[in-house]
Every structure is written in structure tokens, then in C-alpha cells.
Image 1 (cartoon, rainbow, N blue to C red):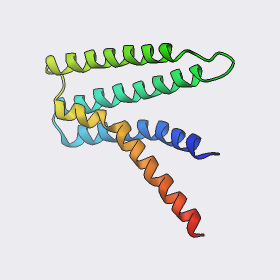
Image 2 (image 1 turned 180 degrees about the vertical axis):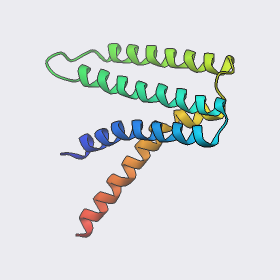
Image 3 (image 1 turned 45 degrees about the vertical axis):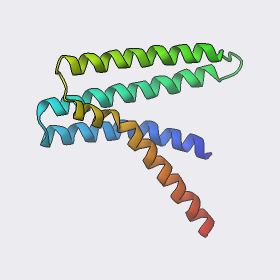
Image 4 (image 1 turned 135 degrees about the vertical axis):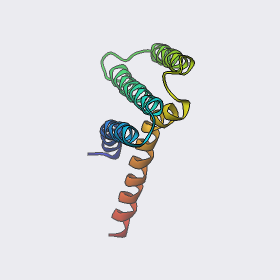
Amino acid sequence: MDAQKRILRFVTRSNWVLFALATILGLAVLPADYTRGIFCGGLLVTVNFHLLARTLKKALAPPHLASHNVILMKYYIRFSISALIIFILIKTHFVHPIGLIIGLSVVVVSIMTATALEIKNLFYKEAI
């Protein structure tokens, strides 16, 4: 399996694992509004990541290659909906902004972990 597929599979799976761990840890040690922020932010960013991956997979798979304008339009619609959801969550004081930022960081942590593991594997193979 090539590195790109391996990284994508790792990120896709670890998003859900990190999301669950962060939410459970938040339940154990943080106030309810922080935990709701972690849950809502993590869910929002993880679902967005999966929708983006699905959009790109469908758009770039022959024989039905989609226009880049269609891809960008779907991206901006999803971005706008996400921004509206975040605005509503913060405006109604349903979540704490710090908890929301922690939840929204799930995919970033997952991608950084996948990159670090791939770099480690690359250097380990060269050392052998």
C-alpha cells in the first residue's frame, strides 16, 4: 500500500478515535460546556473531513471527472454551513469556545500524528 492511502486511512480512523478520547476525557475532568464544545467541534470537523474526502474521491474518479468549480462550490457551501453552526453554538453559549477549539483540533492532531509516523517509517527504512 502506498504512503498516501496509508496516511488517509490512518487519519480517517484516528479522527474518530481522538474524537472519542477527547470527549471522554472532557466528560471526566471538564465542565459540561467545555465537554459539549469538544464534542460539537470534534464531530463537526470529523464529519467535514469525511465529506471532503468523499467529494474529492467522487470528483477525481474516472470516467466522471467533476469540474473544479463544482468541487470549490461544495467546499464553500460546507465551509459556510460549518461557520454558521460554530457561530450559533458560541452565540447561544451552548459550548465554551476553548472546548470548541479543542474539538476542532482533532483532525489537525490526527494529520500531524500520521505525518510523524510516516516520517519515522521513512527514516527507519533508510536506516536498515
